Picture 1 (cartoon, one colour):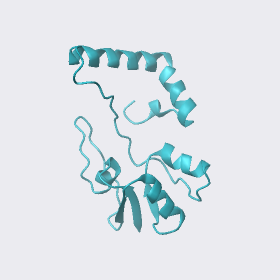
Picture 2 (tube, helix red, strand yellow):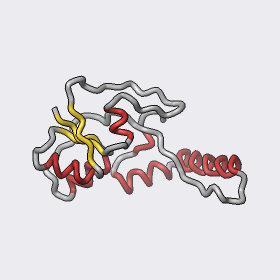
Picture 3 (tube, one colour):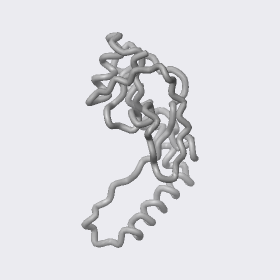
Length: 136
């Protein structure tokens, strides 16, 4: 089977069983008999999937759902193969001490998780509560 994926993205590393993120231990559930086809963008891969040039496409759920909403003749199968931790970028030239800024950002995110705001935002923008994923 030919499986499309964004090149040099976490999903390609996952399919190649080389994904490493400090503090996370991934259980790779990747069939041995796949051919990984890389794309510059998810959109190009999704287009090839819709045209039958590849057998499957690995991408984020919101990206695939948006393609379906826009009329792409594709189907989501099963559960996500993994969930990755994401990050917040900060300005390295900020005058605030880095550890203080990170602590403040973490506190705000935890408060949003505790009062349900994070879940509400996830539902509003994605239609699914991504705060209930792996590691929550």
